[in-house]
Length: 76
Length: 375
Image 1 (tube, rainbow over the protein chains, first blue to last red):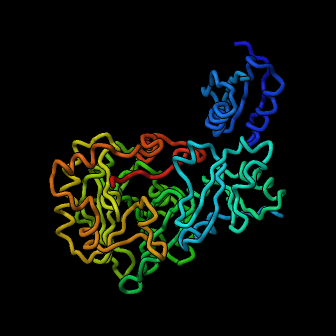
Image 2 (cartoon, chains in turn purple, red):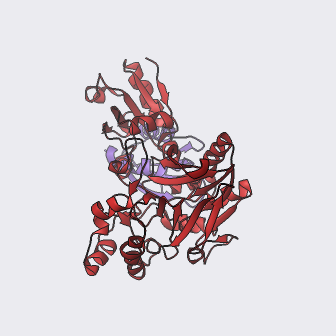
Image 3 (spheres, helix red, strand yellow):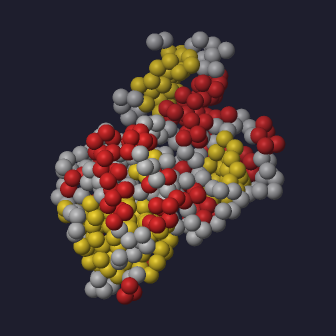
């Protein structure tokens, strides 16, 4: 996967992972992918709900280690 | 305006006293739909916090000016963020300290009654999850029935009352919440009692709770008699306390009955459930006051915050006790059941000692309502 930008949100508690993700996605172009790394367990459901409501796409997740990884494709 | 922190205990008082409150819940929509702070005179608005990061102007018109506002989220972080923004707009608001997690862990002790010879009976109401647990005190000793995970609440209470907890017992192997019975017994040096038929796969030592067992609390002899009453689980056991109270576990609730499917054996256990509800309990005194291990809806809460009702009243009013046709009963308790409790398999495994999640994981597992009943 071609990742345009990686955001390290590890160690941050809600709401910071989403606050930072929202900022970071402004730095990439439509169709590009942002990788978000987080340790807050709530990040998954919140990123899922946020991408749905904001028009971006959560294309993949990796929850196999303590650091959760999310790949978000920027929408229009 | 300054942002205030509201403690779960303050919120509990508002629920019990049926006060007015406007709750702005900033969790995502699924979480809100699934589970929220229930209050008879509470109003709600759900806007996920991520829609408010850039400002709260869009929702200002939807918030009341003449009502107390509480912002709620999962842990508290987002509610502080949103609460601060609302304060900046000039609103007087509070946030729920510790969020839904802390709410889920709050236990409100309610005195049920004095018992014979100076004994006392307390019900611990877990408003955030609908779990009920009990402490029977007498002569410097105490027993805790269906203890929840937050054992410090019971040990603090026992200390305050000057009693030693020497027995903990579970009416059955719980599937909706993590039992504190074993941990509490370990902390206090007491015995942990569990019905052996629910304990065939446990990894620890326990005292076998058999039909007819009598456990005495204190030298004033408050009896707790065990009554085998299967149906929610195969081992489910009820207690008759001081010949006045019937602790039914998850077999019989105030406005509903237990569900037999949480161990995957609905068809096998439905007959046991019927026999317990329509025969075993029928043979008991109708004057007994039923104290269940859960409540599901606020209507089941009495004015004093307790959950209790006479057995005779339940036989007259609880729909689950008035289904004459056996096939219809079978269908009612095996079909169209509500969703199963969050992480119920992992919770059962934890209660059997097979897995030992860390405390953060345990909190996550217990999120959501209890869902142990069929209405």
